[in-house]
Image (cartoon, rainbow, N blue to C red; front, side):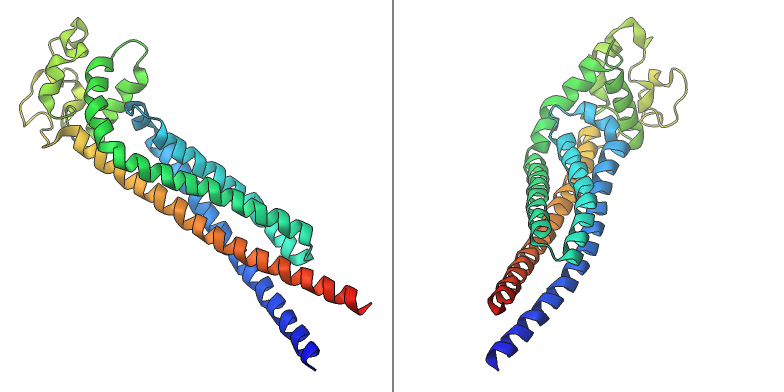
Length: 260
């Protein structure tokens, strides 16, 4: 009687785990879509600012999330097929895929967190130099576009303030045509508007562009880190359920073999 009860209990656990894994796969797809979306959004929507950063860690974190999100979509289908077929080989492959993606997303989350700690110091060391030495210079078109967009999007002028432009290569050259600041500093951009540095004409923001960009990047890094680590934890739970499901299937096969 106890053997029959034990078999029924294991069958019940197997069925429960099977449905739990289906629910997990749905959450897995949703999480994968979130990871992929955050990665693509970071690169496509904010790619201009990447040329202003000395380190590529911000972009690498986003690329890792895109890779992980893409793998999630494929692995989700594998998981469904493995659960339906109840084949231990397929489930084992699914289990190791989950662990692999877990590690990828964990790396992305940790990279984002580590870079978050170093962001302020990096911007202080490199942003002003990048803006004053590379703006409007040959071969630095990406930096020029990034600076122009930065100053317009965040309504700021210069790394720390508008006076930073006075020592820039661009303002010191004939190309500036006697401008005091680039035209992108102006509240309303018109040709040669950078000739006047009056607060009524250009943006005068306390802390300059460096403060605005630091806050913007910090917010994005927190999102990347939270999504990466959050979905990684979800996958770890899925891997644990998969391992339990594989074990129960193994026990069932053992019991069936023992009754023969």
